[in-house]
Image (cartoon, rainbow, N blue to C red):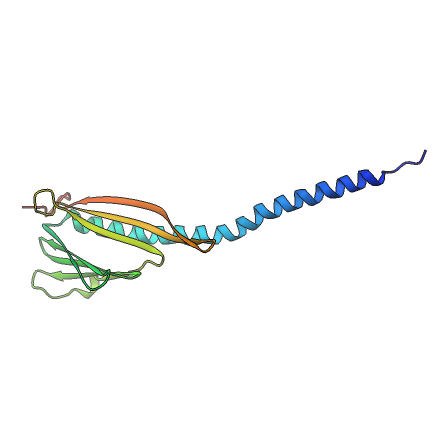
Length: 170
């Protein structure tokens, strides 16, 4: 009797190796496409957190809040502070922060601008008795997958005017 493998044994081994390679290829193939997409979403979410941190500081010092809507979807949030006024304007993928002192002059050193690509930011005032006492900020990252756009990393933040140590609602 000769030592070796039969043709059926070799054929079974080739089929098993092929099936295993196909399964591993699908897993690693999706990882290669999903990893960059996920990294972009996390980067966008992190940039949004920076904007929210600054917004939280300003709202906590607020004496009054108001929102104005421009043409289309552009919105401007105006925050009256004890020592001036801060406004956040949002248009498309950009959020700009403008600071004006008590004299009404713009302070360019404190102004900021953030680019938030693929991020959806919406804010609305909380007015339980006609007066704005808080701000709700909803954020989500738009992710394109398989030709469809979905919202991921959805968050809702509620910021209360005057919650900080200084300033506050009268």
